[in-house]
Every structure is written in C-alpha cells, then in structure tokens.
Image 1 (cartoon, rainbow, N blue to C red):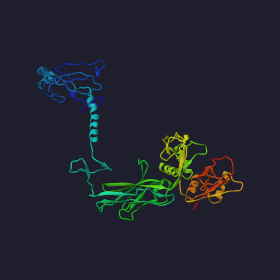
Image 2 (spheres, rainbow, N blue to C red; image 1 turned 180 degrees about the vertical axis):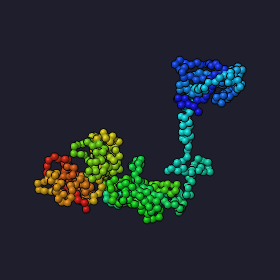
Image 3 (spheres, rainbow, N blue to C red; image 1 turned 135 degrees about the vertical axis):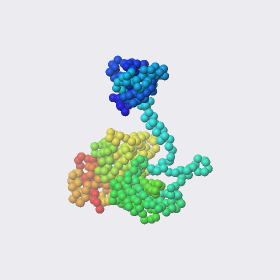
Image 4 (cartoon, one colour; image 1 turned 45 degrees about the vertical axis):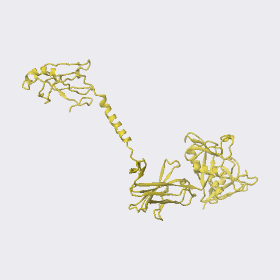
Length: 471
C-alpha cells in the first residue's frame, strides 16, 4: 500500500468528475496548494485505472503534510446527480477522461497515539491483580480448608513438611581455628526423598540484606566460593546432616550463616551465628582525633592486624567493661561509642549507660576514629629492651634480628587479652605508637584497671619494643 512522506498509509482515488473538479467543504490553504490531494466523485462502477469500486465518492481538498487518508462517502442526493454523467462504465472513457490517481489524507487521531499506552496500563493492572503465593521462583499450592473460616492449609509437593534445624545459641571460634556450623533437616511425617538434596550455605549481613555464597552441594559433590574456597566443606556424617566445616578461621568469617535445604520444589532454611573470640579496641591515627573517613578506618584496622568491629562485637565489649568517649566507625558504616559511666561530655548525665549512636554517616566526607576487632594470635608477643633504649628504626631492626617483626597494635591487645601479657615497660609498636599492657594493675603502672596504656606517638625518645613471632 502506498505511504505518505510521514509514513501514513494512503489509498488511491480518482480526481475528476466529467472533466470538472468539484470542491466541497474545505479548499486548499495558502502555501499548501502544491501539496493538496483530492477524492473522486461518482455513483457506482469501477475505476478503469485503479480497479476500485466507486460506491459514490466526492472530491475534497486537504493539505498533505502530516495527515492520513480518508475516503468520504457522498450523500445519496449527490450520488444520484453524478450518476447521470458517469455511472455507466461504457461511457466513462468518453465522458470522464481520468487522470492518474491522487492521494487523500486525514489528521491522525490522538486516540490512536494513546492506544499503546492504554494497552500497557491494562496489562499492568491485570498483572498486579494476581494474588498467587510466590516463593523461591515457584508457585506453591495453598488450598482453603473445608471449614470456610478463611484459614489456609499448605499442601506440600512431597506430601510431607521439610524442616531445617540449627542451634539457637551462637557458635564460638577463634582466629586460625576450625569450626563446624551444625545443620540438620528432616520431614514431618518421615519421608525418604527420591531425589538428591541440594544444600546451600550463605554468609549474611547483620541486617539480612545481602548474601555471600559460601558453598553449594548436591549429594557428595560440592563447590566452595570466594575466600572459602579450599577452607569450607560439607560434613554429612549422619543421616540428613548438612553441617558446614570451616578451617583456618579468619577475622572476616565472624557473622551469620544461612543453611538452606532444597528438595525439588520444597525449600527451607535456618541461620547459624558464628562469633569469634576477640577484643575491640579504639584507634586513633598518629595525626590526631577524628581524622579517618570510613575507608581509611578500614585500612588502618587492617594495618594493625584487625578489622573494623561490628555492632555485636562493640556491644559485647561494652558489656565486658569498655567505656570510650570518642565516636568511631563500625563495619556497617555507622558511627557509635560505648559509655558505661554517663558524664556530661559523653551524651549527658541523663542518658543511661549504653551504646551512643550517630547512625550511618557519609563514608567519604565524615571523619571519626575507628573501633577495630582482633582475635587470638597464631604466634606470641614478647618484649625486647636495651639499656639506653631504642629509636623506632632501631626497634624494628632488633625484632628482625630476633627472627620476628615489630608487633602491631591489634597483636598487643590480643596478647594482653588472651595470653595475659603483662609488662610495665613502654615499647614501640609498628604504627609508631608507644604502649604497654597491664594485666595485673599495680603502683607506678597506670590506672587501677587492667588495660593497654598508651604514650601516644612520640616523635623523639628511646624505648623498648614489642615483637611478634609466628609459631
């Protein structure tokens, strides 16, 4: 079918009636006369050149630009008047010589432009009206009971309910150790599955908004992912056991894990909480208080043999006595600080003891201190001294001469916490700070409470050094 320059479909119609052009209704507008088109007029018969059956048409003239074609039927009176001159096909060649077919256009309807949008809206309405229960990519069959009281009963595809069981209490481990996260499954009533069960373990964020794949297993075949590759495997010692074994536990392994069991279309899961035995310590960089954005706080904790603490780890430290009146970053991007003795500069006297929170902060723009978390050590921390003391560079060399390295802040805290390191002599650490650990408070060794004392970051001075050596 022919089309206009703007893409509209066009129909042919002859343009003369008995040697005359008859104009009804509109004329050609100024400036558009060279683009107009017309419709032919007659009372029946077939046009000899186009083969179109007339049925009675009249010529109308319209501008051509951006318009669509329409053939206008004649009124009965006009059709009868025109029949006397041009109704017989035999007379058409003599009485009405016909020019080449011309085109007729008509303005596009706004309704036609809105039709696709209306269709999309109708489809969206239909989709939103669906109330099928949806779970894990499959539609499950919920059938109303016979009592008609609106309660639902679930029909299970296997004819039995799949249950997954994990311990409710946290599972504790330590840095460098091995740990098993228990998980078992069963059916009610008991059922022997005819398919291979699929097991999936994932590590969750504290707010359950993100998962990290740990391991997937089908039967005795399994694949571990990411940092768990080579460290995680499935223990299936007992019937219907799906426990996860993690070796060489790392600081980053602390957190919640989901055990998911998939049997055909049935899918159930439970969560296990893995907690590392460790210590939370506040950290300020050498250039002063509140100088770290979130990413810098992550980096300095790693440099000190630790990671940014989680809220649960900070809360545990607070419950064990940590009181610190400087706000610091946590692993979730919030800024908080623990207070056991309320005081005016630390939130006011009216607030009860607890964790004070600034909430989430901008990770690039805002600057605070950091709360770092360190766990047990795989080696030992020991002290070296010389009669005249050592500079920082001399201290580093002394540790290397002893087959060790200068200790980091996190290593000193862990040695004090888990190995009972007690030394009333100040020593250099890797970050340029000078500290000493006191497990048994005594005179001339600082405050009456146990802890790690700090002399800050002296630019001059001669001290001993704390070294660290792997076992």
